[in-house]
Structure formats: structure tokens, C-alpha cells
Image (cartoon, rainbow, N blue to C red; front, side, top):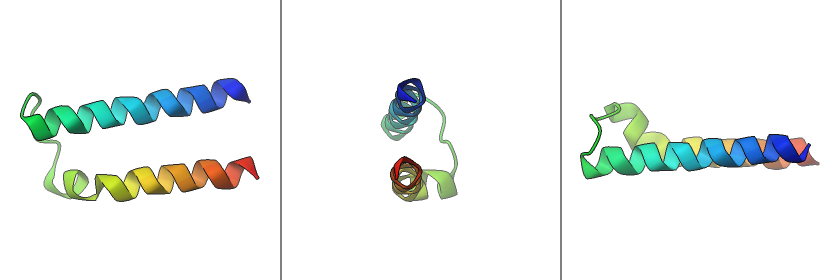
Length: 54
């Protein structure tokens, strides 16, 4: 169970780095819709992780 949460944490970190690099112009723009709604995606992933835990 602990390894699954570690994998999820690494995925969230990788997504955060990807979006940060996109916002800084280092990587090409990911897409208008995705770049606009990324906070909602992270909230949904976090809520899903909390619901799975209980």
C-alpha cells in the first residue's frame, strides 16, 4: 500500500514539473484546455486518493 502512495506522489510531482516548465516556456504549450484546468485535475486526483484511503 505504501508503494502505491509513493507512485502517486511521484506522478503528481512529475505533472507539476511538466506544467511549470510549460508555463515558463521551456516545453511547448500542452494545450489551452489542459493548462487552464490543471488545478482541478490535481484536486480530483487528491480527492480520489483520500477517498480510496478510507
